[in-house]
Length: 254
Length: 260
Image (cartoon, rainbow over all chains, first blue to last red; front, side, top):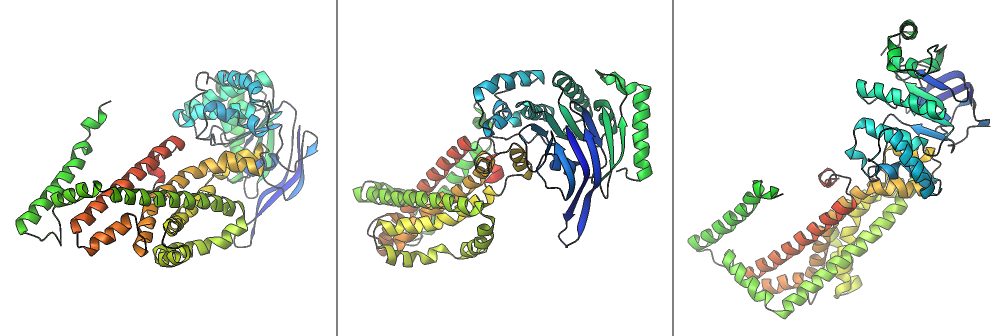
């Protein structure tokens, strides 16, 4: 579904120098796969996601999504940012239907679907509320529904639960897996939490900074469907320990 | 409910009024200050009643109010259109902005005499003076507001394949509204100022003209009475603007943006 080959990205700094954000990144994501990307800040995770989304141009290399090279935003991709980014002047339902509006599709047809998705994430009855009346977790769930409303094939998520407290975060992880198991999207999930990456992913991509590159890709052998109990298993502990050891060897623990 | 009855301001605000006006009255009487220097509040009140009984005073009010509102409408509308255009084109914005800042620092009141020469002694010149004074603070706020959308919101819309036009209407304009209203709130007060200044320079009717007439006859109490009327007009327009703001920009805290 996604093929990245020798991707490079360099930024020009203000004083005329250059910063290498991504160096020779190669990666493949299969259709329906849940891929976690973990790494400390500054490792180019967000840059990678922005290039995949067509929001930022690459410097060199090849990025192919669903058989086509990426050269701009695509309609079959849904994005969730760290910050819910709901528009304050729109109700939850109006926010969720924004992609439908922008692509000039029939609102009436998608209303049902939007309401069903809101119910799926536990926001039934909140469709008429404004974002500032919702908690952080509820806002983020609305943002996920917005990303799903046009039924995209690919879901790009940039630390979507990074701003939430630990308890809410675990609940959101479980909910996200439930949604994913129901609709089997290809998910590209960025996080800086090792347990979160292992708990969610089929594979975990480990990145390191300066310049951003892939250090290792690990398969997660945990059976699905996964519940929070999986976090107590020895396999889970071994895998998180291995990833942590990688970061320590790289000397890049924040 | 009845919350305002329990708030201290409910009593302190009228309290201050009574205290100031009361001591003013007492001081003027006790010290025997001549009414030509400072009239007592009671004399101002009598002058106000006398003025309000004159049909010509009501004409003055109507004329000044018309000049104010027409000037505000023209100034605000052109500031919104010009600001919208400038904000759409990066190079234009960068080119024009230093000039705008420069013009902002020039006291626009100083060009009122020129405008009266150009547009005559009738209503038109006052409307133009008012519009010019209103134009700049609103323009600057519109430009600032249209640039105030967070990168994240722009990315969100771009990722949805939104057109430039859609990004403008769906995120840039709503994000600019709190700034626009901050500008309109300043503008509405300035528009009264513009009309009065225009009338000072040359007019045959209006509250500014009335102040000058009363000045010639040394009717200081009458001048104060006109000031009271102008204050009432200003406060009414300001409150009206606030009420509209609260309805339109319901998601933003009015206090957060009024200083912008």
